[in-house]
Image (cartoon, rainbow, N blue to C red; front, top):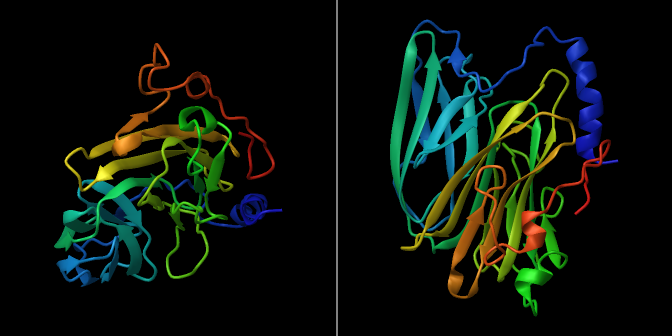
Length: 300
């Protein structure tokens, strides 16, 4: 039995005895009547060769939970603990504008930093966040195995599964757990992050698997995808999907990587269904996730 499933069974019991039974969905308003001040110890600005940046500091109003972090327009919710916060977030190659914002009844305060990332271009970066605390919106990546004879056909079955329990693939795909100060996966706003610096040719499936706690009826998952990041042909896409049923799996995006790094993205339910199979094969267009209620796994 998985950790996720144990969490799903036990958390409703907690809420039977909790005075805080209402659903929290990205509530940003603190109780303080005086505008909160933010002390940001990291980052200090300047430049880095790292792909991740640590955002660390404190907010004077301890009731502000979460705070808002905005990096180049990508929005994250970050938990606070007794007014303190610390979390690593992904950067894009080049200039990154980081804004940390706290809101209470007295108003909104913010601190801004600029970081120049001299990291190499990233062919694939996938970030999944949610608007609700205390839930799992697990990110699952199905990437094609390397050196397939017929990548666009064989990708249907010759896959590597990268997720919270398998955080690296043989070809170099990397999954970053949603953690704040410890090594294991935590429920909450995210982000879940997947990157690949040398992605194999073929088709990738991006899924979200939803595990709510006792009082959380639904959430909205937000997927930010960057393909060929830091290159002239960079492609960015934001995809939102409602998640409501325990154990529900939603395929949020398909990614196709061709020779020479040419990339395509298809968001089922949002993009028009392709009328032919010139880019997306039939097995992609007609795919539907098969749920397995009662476990945290599901069939391909």
